[in-house]
Image (cartoon, rainbow, N blue to C red; front, side, top):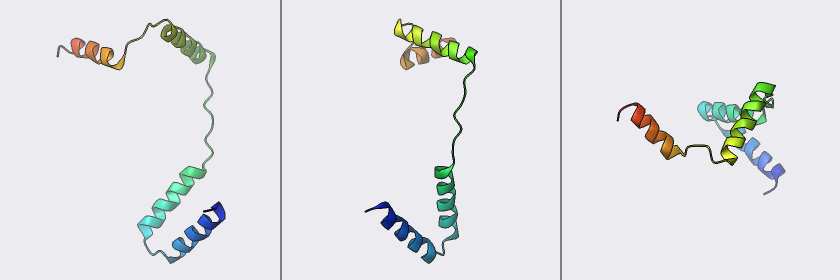
Length: 78
């Protein structure tokens, strides 16, 4: 089904619907979908921290999720 066909079917369904909650939810969804999201800009300190972290990962200097959970459990004396 082409986009134009889908639009026509949606418009038809919207026009027939009396379900306010559904219409509000659909409207909210469309607004979220159509919002233009601004790209987050990193400052030099943040870029440097990311570069350092990438180096650590490349060198194998990191914990797996399981290892970090074990350390946390040890700290919490579990």
